[in-house]
Image 1 (cartoon, rainbow over the protein chains, first blue to last red):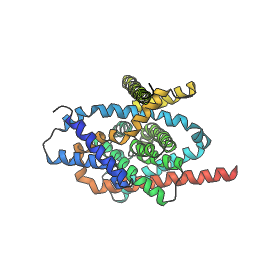
Image 2 (tube, each protein chain N blue to C red):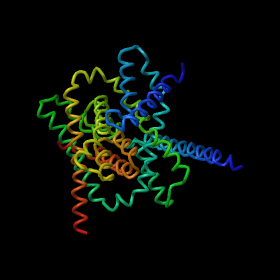
Image 3 (tube, each protein chain N blue to C red):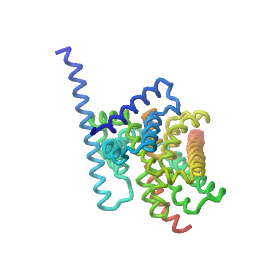
Image 4 (cartoon, rainbow over the protein chains, first blue to last red):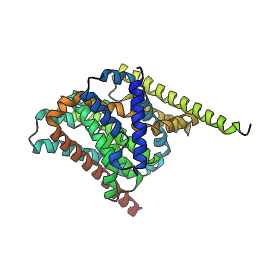
Length: 224
Length: 132
């Protein structure tokens, strides 16, 4: 039946979103979790066509492009706040980005992981199109880079707000910058749900981190 | 007339919102063509976000239909991420080989990145406020 995958995805999302709201917006009930797990299990355990799913949900991909473009709205509205604290914002994005890449590569080195893994994890905190382009340019696996990016974003969106609350960080701009820097577009989507300022900060952090990684990483890789 | 007014208002808002969604999609897709044509290493949606921000600065405001359309899209943002997340099913064999190492790398580095970014911002903001 044409459109079945789209209907199923939307239906699962509606159920997951209702559960998330009823459950007091708990991290582990994040509305992307239930539909993603159900669909992955379905494809993994059955012979159902994943290609059909991709074709039928393509409209959501177009919506995703439009939604990221739409972040210009909160970004414009909150430009004054970000401009007023630009030194802190840029320092936070740089520190968050460097510490993320440093920890990822440090763990591979400490655990004596395979050398080929480095180039596939250094792009973990940037949005997928940039990550796969950069990973390819520096000799990493595009598929692995994409998987790492997705899991990174999901872990930032699910656990990020909880970690920040535990640390006593309740400033919306600070939370947004942290979620956008570490969790790229998926972290940013969570920030947008919480407040306009948080969404705008996350959008700026995601774009700045992505652009800087796209420019700096291939150059750095050549030097190293 | 008075009973129709709220319905008409809702319909007008829905039409505005849909026009806004269509406009934002067209901008992102058009810039996607430009990105592909000139091999620019920036996602079209991020480029569209930058171009639209510059447009709003020049325009000194956000046109209402774009504002309404953006609101519609933000309400369903997590839904839009489900297909890219499900794409992981294509990488199951790859992930099965090194899942523990990858999980460790991803979670630890992501959590540290969040903490460092937030605390750096907090410390510098406090420093700037004390200085002022």
